[in-house]
Image 1 (tube, rainbow, N blue to C red):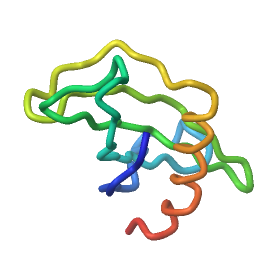
Image 2 (cartoon, one colour):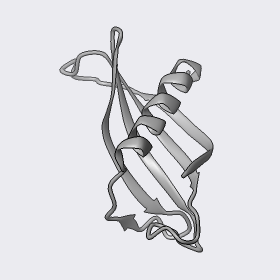
Image 3 (spheres, helix red, strand yellow):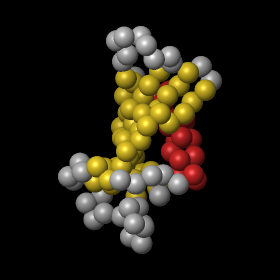
Amino acid sequence: MIIKEYEAEKLKDPTGILEGDRYEFFLEIDIPEDDELFSENGVYLKVIFSVNGTETRIANYQFFEDTTNKLLDFELEEEEELLVKTYCEQHYMNVM
């Protein structure tokens, strides 16, 4: 899995219930053809990334087919989850 590009925005918590900040990432990913997640229509990953002080984590994620926005029922493998978390850690500060 290769992350080709992303869009992100900081989510607002009007209630003030959640501690820290949340960011919504849309990651366009490149999936090898031999992977079960592969789709000719493309695949993107929607990630809710949580930052609370120095603690960061993936709060939630979902795979979608790119052209149809159809939800795909797949989970990240451990190394993929680490890749996504690291990517979000490196890019969340660029979000306005």
